Image (tube, rainbow, N blue to C red; front, top):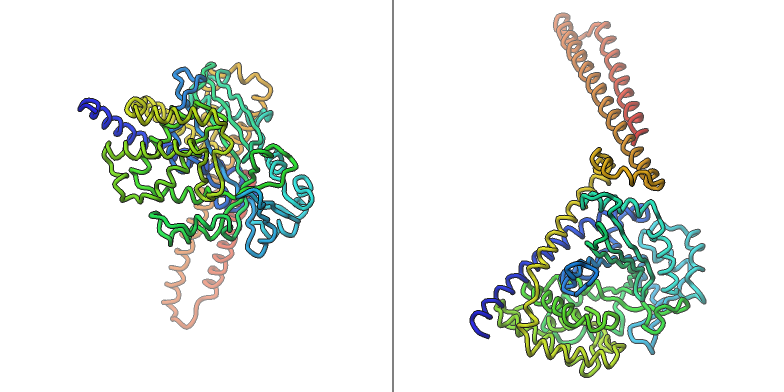
Length: 550
């Protein structure tokens, strides 16, 4: 590489470092909003919902902006403005005393069947507000011959969480985006699609402003069961020799495991299937959080180049899960202190070439071991012609590295930074709405701008709710304020009167001696006590009255 090209490469590394920081900011503000939405949406069913509901995938692990490098013709500049969110719901915990309810399937490595009855499910409940009556009602819907059926459970969950065809919710979402993008609501559109996938209940939608796509949001609700032991099929991962992390950390991570509502590829849409799969996403999050800043940088670049050059070969058979598996194995083989993770451009390039060559070897032999269960081949279902095309593309990347490395990083960074500002605006509006303040939707400028939209029957119904809620909140604030003022005045007067009388009693006592207090003074003190009691009653009555408007 000539000196000029070398300088350009170093500058590109700095651009990627900036993007890594932007990626972190995006995930931080995004996770904050998601936690608020999840807490508000599910607190009725669990007192500590965030303990058992968590954000997973790249939105929690990092490198989520890598998917922006994938070409997407739905956007004017073809940058894939996609936010992908995975939300895991841990619904039950099967402790070791119930271990016999989980049965490994010998012919399908990593997959299990789960027996269930009402007593087992109630014993495994981890705080979700569900009665025996409800379990009795729902269990026959997704449990046949005593075994839980993942596809039926996901279909049931889809019906419970569905937003599409719920006009009220759809209009409310459009109102939010109208305020964020400072546009008329009639110019905002969200084209939503909700389906059951192999592993989750999934939904996605484009946000359109004036018929132009500005954002693509996809999210997956993933149903998990926690188990209180480490599965035998993953013992090789627990016990194998490694350079990272320490065995002590591995031991801490392997006290429990999870099972996901995911069937094999052949029966993923089979409603009668009993097949579930072990999941290690919680450990993936921990391991990636332990990586060094240089490892995180390499991971982001590797994933970005994968989305740019490999993913387009087949959107249905090529997944970024390949990238994560290869990266985790490389981190295990080469600890953060190894020279392959040095921060120079030379070391960064060597690390990336190494990772791509690992991918090439996998597609050449037709096998890439699942990081946690080495008997599972995660590229087994990829067609031979796709494997060949991937191999050719990888060799092109390795042999012409700089040409493939010089991506439009600055452009992506600018787009993501703008997205962060929009998300911050969304967060601000959400905070106000959560506290009952709907001023962003009720101010005169917004109402005048959207007068035509307000003529819609469904919109009028929505606004009636907002106005009613706002009016009740304002009335409550007025009552609270007035009660507080009156109570404070009464208490102050009582204190003044009490002090005056006590002073008079003290004077009278000193003038006639300490052995007797005039009867009149005692009567006055009794009157003070009665007045104090009445004041307390007034205060309590005021608080009760105030609660009527909460």
